[in-house]
Length: 544
Ligand code: HEM
Image (cartoon, rainbow, N blue to C red; front, side):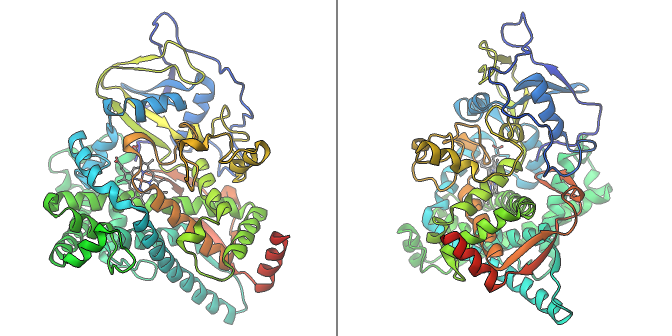
């Protein structure tokens, strides 16, 4: 989402003036960095020609955790501190809106939750959030499993073709495969529509990708030329964008019409009792139509569905892509993950219950989100003047900001902060467990688990905003558990059957950003079937 690749002028960081206006807050951290490397071995490419958020990280180390970044006449305050992030996202959340982000996404998502104005947001969030009930998630795990089976079947067939020509591994762009899988899952889970994109191409699928592509283009282009009257008729890519949008909107309108026409009292009763087990259609659309018929306006419903389609597709595909990228460079961790899968599932099916036992896989997912947060920056604009707190290492006077200030909360910086994370650039899913074991603490490393009892995954509450892959406060991601479980199921099912290697070197994987951090030319991997012997050996070792 964020304007990461702005092309106008050289961004220039300046020390941010604190509220006691007599001095500049060029503060030194109280804690020295635990280990302050600027790049890591798993980092694709050097910083030259890399997205802006890499430079934001260097400037964070140089200028502190709250600094101002000027782009010609425009300026952003860049925040890399959990206390300041908590203030903006939770404590004073309603004094901020989505600023630049809403400008970019409103033409696509309308009044959907992400760009919505405060009063629409309040009303829709109250209606939508209960839809992500734990029994809905349980029903979704069955859909995740079914969709992953289709992907596995496709890989099996491709491998069979290869075995007739000598048993070579298959080479696949795993980013593209995860993108298709995530699209199928979000379609079925949110509006019971089977894109079938793992095996097919269709005008609707092409339109979804076209729209995502345009959202990305807009987020990286400084001058919003698409707002110029007639641009949508004259500029070919804008014409295409409006055609794509129409294709998706027509499809969603049809699904909404159908959901309304097929509304049945027996289903409503089942939903009221949260009895998802016997529902033929457990989708969120069914829930929204059945439970809230009186408040549903078709246009709003379409905006809600479009928002979830866009918000829930590429993000999850990106998490899986980077998880595989990281695992492929760490074969011992891949084997450890497979050992856990062998132990918990053998050759069996992933279920809602089994997710609770697949702890290492869950931690791989969150560690991937720590290193590659999607999106890497959260964007806000101050509606009123505010006083940001001094922050963990900050100036005790805090920072006064005027109304209209644009803010980037750098989740990337927070997640790789040398002040909070040991070896911040290293892929270490165990980091969440190490301290728990050594200190006898029930929960995840260094965090206070009593703040979020029963959580399956580390989150921003437990970490007090030093780990916020889904944001925090009232505008926190509504689909966080959906996405985490989906990623855990997909990774489990992939590693249960296959060994994965990178086709080229990690350095050859070029990184670009728009809405999410993704690769420039795909994540090309070699996939081969795990042998039963290998699986059993690992199993025995793990059991030992
Ligand atoms: C909001 C991340 C998957 C729906 C957000 C935000 C983040 C995020 C960081 C907060 C944005 C902000 O504060 O500006 C992710 C990641 C995902 C994911 C990393 C996958 C790994 C999903 C899924 C859905 C979804 C699967 C829907 C099924 C939404 C919605 C919002 C949101 C509707 C706006 C919430 C609001 O403003 O009330 N997401 N998301 N996301 N996400 Fe997700």
